[in-house]
Amino acid sequence: MNSSALAHFFVWLIRTSMEAAIFIFIVALIQLVIKKQLSPRWRHAIWILIVIRLLMPVSLPSSLSLFNFSPIKHSAVFNYSPFKPASRGVTPHALEMAGRMEKEVVPPAGGLSSSPPSSRRFIWACFIIWLAGVVIFTSRIVQLDFAFAAKVGRTKMVTDSETLELLDQCRRRMGIRFPIGLLETDEVQTPALYGALHPRLLIPKGMSADLNPEELEHVFMHELAHIKRHDMVVHWIMTLAQILHWFNPLVWAALARMRVERELACDSLVLSYVKDAEKESYGSTLLKLLERFTQPSPNPGIVGIMERAEPIKERILSIAHYRKEAQWSFSALLLILLLGTIGLTDARTSLSDLPGLTHWWPADGTAEEKIGGHHAILHGNPGFAPGVYGQAFDLNGIDQFIEVPSSPDLCPKGSFSISTWVFPRQDKQQVIISKWGVWPAEYNNRSFVLHTLPELGLRFCTSDLKNQWNFHYQYFETKFEVLATNKWNHVVAVYDQASGRRQMYVNGMIVAERMDPPITLLETTVPLGIGAVIEDAKCTKTHSYFNGLIDDIRIYSRALSAEEIMRIYKMTGMKEP
Image 1 (cartoon, rainbow, N blue to C red):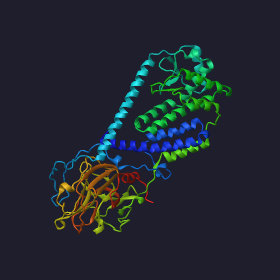
Image 2: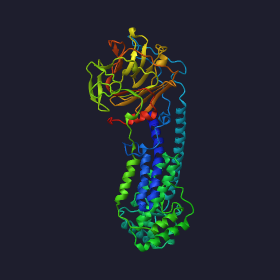
Image 3: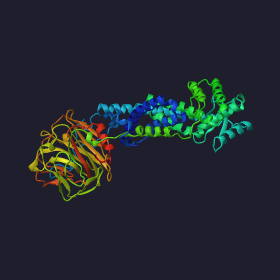
Image 4: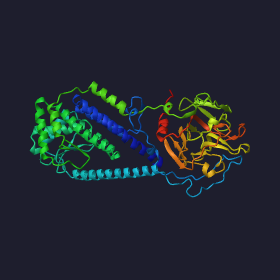
């Protein structure tokens, strides 16, 4: 897994854990209010939604999502990659003058490879701490489970025919088709199941002699209820979620409550199979098992009838008030559907609510601008093809480009951001958008340019009058292979004048960042070019043509935040209202 993938994963993890915390609060509140109206089976099912939320790799946006109203944001801190990108150095390619400079320019010490910002150091530290916790918890679980498995493996199966016949009767009664192994061992204090794929029922040594047949039947029925409900599989999925989100105390609390609801649900399932007169004796069996219980088993791989002593009062009261329920409850299903809709989806966002949009070329079958009124001119008869939002400019990389006649407001006066979608067909240097005059008649006419580089990199150049020939300042580049050919890439370039920071994002993730002394971009007279550099005001010298599709070009008069950039990226394929 490369650093970019790890960064994506860590961003997902932190954001998911924060959103799950809000979802946990909502679920807990609902269960507190309508607990008596829901059976334990449905209460447990609702908690499963939390586990799904904790492990969901992606979620669809929805206007009904709970997170439309939550304070959770894609914090800028958590959109930094925790891994410092390798510097490609400053290697200018054919952008300067007719000679198309190919000379290697070596930056001064501390130039592009300056120390990562404090936010990146912070996220790196967080990642290391999280990873250490995962390693510790995983190692402990594996160690305990392997040791337990070795001890259980040396335990002989129960051979008493009456006990085995009683277990088999209970198994058939509950509709479980495969046989269940029964072992007596000193490794457990109370009955428990062990093994997710091939579960075995473990009982303490001597317990089969201490309990009468009815009590033993209750024990077997309860453990078989875990099998019928597939609790062992759910248990290990819960364990995975707890390992990944070990740092979140609300996750621990939610999963602890979910285990209590699991036992209540198993009690309820057992009571649905026994006669009404046996309810009291089933509760008495639990109390008798409590006498044998001293402390919970340290092994995380078992699911038992008495994992903790604290909830026993709640279980006895639940047994006393048990009412047989229908297998399916319309109201409970409706509640789960509602909670899934609001909790397993993400906030629905609109690009129209992002302030500061000053120029926008949607490329939907025309070169007209939707915001600033600067209608473009098509050169070389470029076509249109299906894009991310409707249609996109389709450029051949030979002689096709889009010219936007020069205007003072096309040169940002302070902070600005460029957002666009690109579909490059070739891996080469090719311009996305530029206002960069370099022909001799247009010397000192460089303002900004965003273009790709060979080996799937990006370069974002900015300049004022002072830095017209300062390539060390102008060239701000990513590492290699941040783009993909023949795929859509969301590219954003950001300049924050207050700090002098330049950033580039690809598909919602930051891929490069650098700080320089703040400048005010030069107001140039050359046209703005989309898909090529236009070197002179008369549009006679053009080069670095883009071969591929360019869609939804937007210029903002401010520095977009990491959260806003992620919002734009996540709206892939969504039509603008």
